[in-house]
Length: 189
Image (tube, rainbow, N blue to C red; front, side):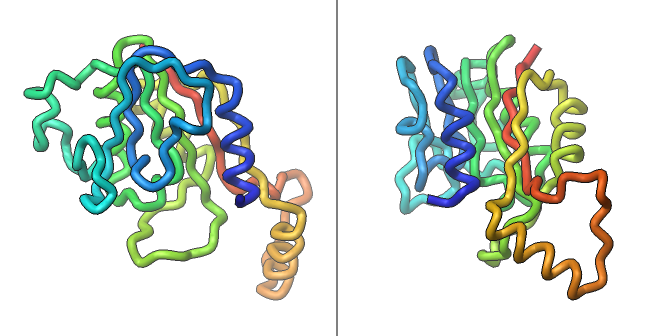
């Protein structure tokens, strides 16, 4: 298990999930096995047909385009999990708007974004810094309730420092350069 995934599971372990849940991008790694669970309704939305999600959905597209209104799923979920998939989203603002519209008022979004991560797939589009990601969530209307910075492992940080030094990059002494991303709990008000 990766160091970053371990930090995400640790963050999730504090939640008791009840009500209805939408797991966006959860086809390969459903969040259901990572948290205390008492959800009455659990749906996986994914764009990979081979994974047989409950809802086949390209999160980059407006929810209305795939019939969420007709299905009665808009403003219908207590929880939306959007984890480990942000780098595959090319229309980040639309995707987060979609997550916002899936939630009931007072509902919870659990999401994460890494910005220091090895490039590993031709379908990667976006790696947000924690501050940029939080700002975008607030612009959409979310209230940030809790956040945890994802850190590089000690081994990865040593390598990162060597790489920066070799490239002549300055590492500001006042910044925590081990931060590689953020895990966020946000509320729809």
